[in-house]
Structure formats: C-alpha cells, structure tokens
Image 1 (tube, rainbow, N blue to C red):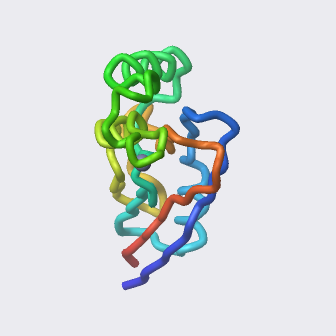
Image 2: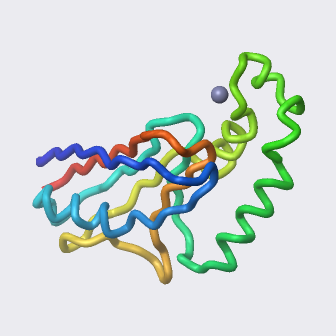
Amino acid sequence: MKSFRKELFFNTSKRFELINITHDVENAIIESGVKEGFCLVNAMHITASVFINDDEHGLHADYFRWLEELAPHEPLSLYKHNNTGEDNGDAHLKRQIMGRSVTVAITNGKLDFGPWEQIFYGEFDGRRRKRVLVKIIGE
Ligand code: ZN
C-alpha cells in the first residue's frame, strides 16, 4: 500500500472566501501514483473548512448569507470567545457547520465524484497563511 502526504497553503485577501481546490487534489493524486484508494482532505485550522458541493456563484453567495445569518461576524461582543482578545468567534462556528474534512474514493487514478461534486476550501478568518492536508492511501 502506498501512502502520500501533501500540504496546500492559502492566504486569502478577504476574511471569508470559498476556493475550489479540486485541481490541487487531483494533482496530489497524480503525484501519489495511487490508482485505487482513498483521499482525505482536511483543513488544519479551526476557523476553516473543507467541503464538497457545486461550483456555482449563486450557491456560494447563499452560503455567505446563510452563514452570516447563523453566525454574523459583528457585533464582536456577541461571542464569549472574543473575550480572549480574538475577533473570530463567528469563524469557529462557521467552520463547525461546514465541516473539517472530506474523504473521496479514488478509482482508476481519479476522484470518484457524483454529478457536479467539487472540493472547496472554506475560509472564515483569512488574511493569514493557513494549510490544508491531503492524505492519500491505496495502491
Ligand atoms: Zn478563535
């Protein structure tokens, strides 16, 4: 069995951003040489997510509106977590609902997706360097 590990790096210009990382994951699978196996992709920060959905601008705007309704960034005083001196209480909650990781089957050297599935990095407290782990096992 082969095992392959890679980190992807992000430093978004905005606090909230959704980035399609499907091609980065596909490239990691090619690098790994794995044809049959599994690929785990996870955010290595507690204010960012990795999730699978459609690459459609209206949907991404809906995510932004929905997440801001659930956990608005302001007022900062809304969150006890911000009493620590941080300002990212909302980002922790957004990460929780959008998830930490995805696992995708690899078949014939490719991501074995359903229709329209794409992998996204969800950034909720950006403007600093953050990482995503890609771990691939198989043969
Ligand atoms: Zn925090």
